[in-house]
Image 1 (cartoon, one colour):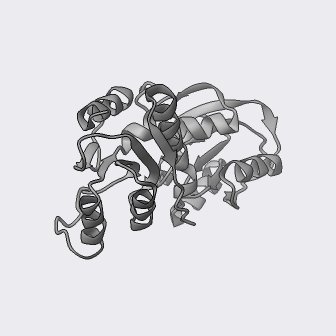
Image 2 (cartoon, rainbow, N blue to C red):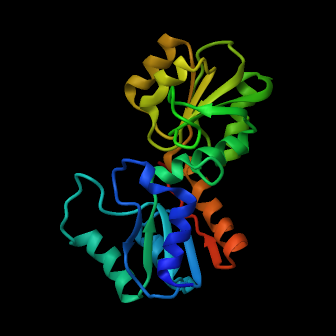
Length: 253
């Protein structure tokens, strides 16, 4: 399909115009006009670009692209190498940040919530619809002991997690927001969640968890944000007959 048609499909699916974001959503680096093979991934790192070149991709779709607010506008060093590799190989780069977090079926939060088995979902932010919320609150089918819930999360993200256990409180109501969303922990408390799951942790987050009596899990920024890129690859392959694959360039962060 044409590059313009490809971006239209993504924009219709992810509705980027609804979000005030920290980076441009959509086509960030222009490549060839026709797109047949697509690689999706979490971050537009050099390793992902090199993997896309090896795969023969016409386009790369990522959650973490380029041109963030506050970032130096100079295309030098690492940024030059990344962008020059894209241009030399005529590969389009598409980045979607908050729209991919928030999407109720294709998004990072939706994918993590699906993997855990959450039902009766609402947005984490008060007064914000589930379609636009950056974060999800939902319920397990029944209360779980803390140890069992930790094992569930570690099996879902395939790694050990940081778990701040604040006591014997069983877990049924779960709040989550993937990536670097540790600052939302107080909103999880206001949502009456038993646990808050995100990717990263700050020093003060642990004190908030302890003092407000909510279990806290930092399960990895990268690990919690694989879901959206995986879903987009499946969406492009099954719904639009493209050769689309997710390539995981793992990060312990």
